[in-house]
Image (cartoon, rainbow, N blue to C red):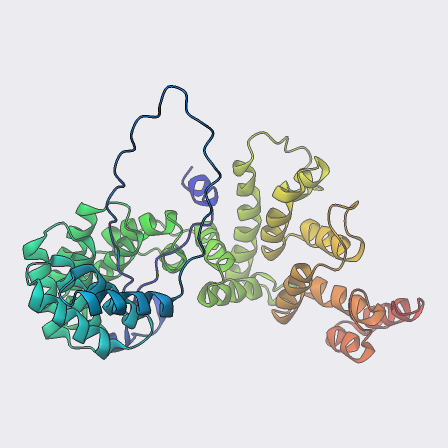
Length: 427
């Protein structure tokens, strides 16, 4: 059921923030002073309630939505407003935030300090100044501003979260834990705070609590949390050891483009691909984990009849039912998990397309083949040899085709080359 909840998650946007990496999970410790700033969270005021419509309203004209202003246009408008009213609060803060976004941190700091000379009790101004000072790695002064922001408004989530980051950089692990916990008390669904709290709890030796926080962030779609949670399952740190769950979370992070997750899956695939006398207990277990991962994908589609799982997968079943949009990402997951049936289906889709629904020669399939061929997957190498040799969707390249056949048994390589030569290259 836990795996089902994990695989049913969508692809939400992740909050950008600083990354903490613990040696036990990532192999290296980042320099805390190099951490980028967390993205500010702002709570916008609710619009005023609209008046009740008249009893016989006339049709309203279709509103024209203006194009969003560029940063330079926002900057110009803020300066114009301040020229008329130098002590205006919002234009001054807007100017500071825009300068900060444009990379002029010193200019932003000057504007925030000017705003505070006119309005010393505005909590948001102290928060903005603290955030800019963090970019300068002036941790002590930044903490002073954030503490003042919290004194004026204890409900500023971002202030508590940023204080957690500063506490970490200064080596105050317990204070960092408390700050992140306070941010989460105010905003339970703050995925980045769950993630950062999980990493700091790991540093404190509270592995079970750390895994729970990482799970919350991973379920919210945060790729880094998914990656670290996969590592936890692979090693059994804070959770029951499970290679299936490790693959599940790494796959989710990989689908969001996280390089670390791609590397973790590549290493495990290479281990699982070992066959014959070189196969070890570990490689056999890895191959079994990938197979079980594919089997668990059926839980995402309880309406499907599993039928003969020796010849059908979730992806191929969806494809036969005409549910192409659902089938394609599942086929890719299964193929990356070393499923031969889904791999063959993707090769066929690349070469032939699908009845007007999917054109042939999809770049995404070619990328899959090239990625897994680089991992040493023989089916992908032979497929690419055929694609390059016959010029399927790209310029014929016999030399490249031969390069993919290197290392294969001589008879098999010879047969493939003869098959390629038996048909003229595609234009």
